[in-house]
Structure formats: structure tokens, C-alpha cells
Length: 135
Image 1: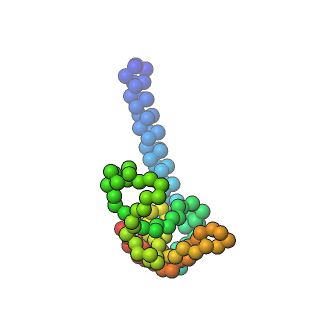
Image 2 (image 1 turned 135 degrees about the vertical axis):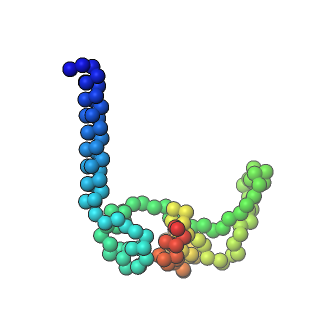
Image 3 (image 1 turned 90 degrees about the vertical axis):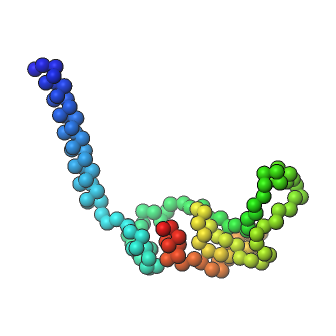
């Protein structure tokens, strides 16, 4: 067998391996199960009753409350020190925003329970509205 024959055989083996890998991937994708479409999540009850979502239910997310925001220049930011007051864009008593991974999901008010702060949800954004914001 010449060097050219050996090289061509190695190339054919590489293509055969690649083709086999592609076929295996296609087969795995075909048998993987149903895919989740955002339209399936429209029904509120379908979110928790869909067994294919069980996989993601234990994924941790970051829940935060936003009291308000303010736009200031870097010059003013550098001048802040202890005792400085920053004016926010909210009126006292206005509901706070509840964010999950930076996405608004509810509004609420601050409560104190056993010397710890908490939030009482007063208005929850519907799942339909949250899905529409994702698009």
C-alpha cells in the first residue's frame, strides 16, 4: 500500500467517524423527547404540571427588591460620602419592584418580621405578561 493510499484511507476513516457522530447526534435529538415552546407556557397551570419542566425547578435565581433609581454623573458619584443623600425616582410609600434575575415579576411593600426585612407582594405580574416581555 502506498503513502497516498494510507492517507486517503485515513481521510475516509475521519469522514466515516464524522458521519457516524452526526448520525448519532441526530438520533439522540430525535429521541430526546418533546421540546418546550413558549406557547406551551401560556397556560398558568401548564407551568407546574408539565413534567419536562421538573428539570429546571431547582435552579437557583437571584431575587432582589429595587427601592428606586437615580442617574448621577461620575463627578457627583465620587463626591458621595457618609451622610450623603441620593434622591431616588420613587415617592415614599410607592410599591417596590421585585426582580428575578433582573426581570420585573412583582411589586410589594417592605415588612419587618422578627427583626428581619421582608417584602409582602401586592401585585404579581402575570405569567403571560412575563413571557411577552421575553419576546
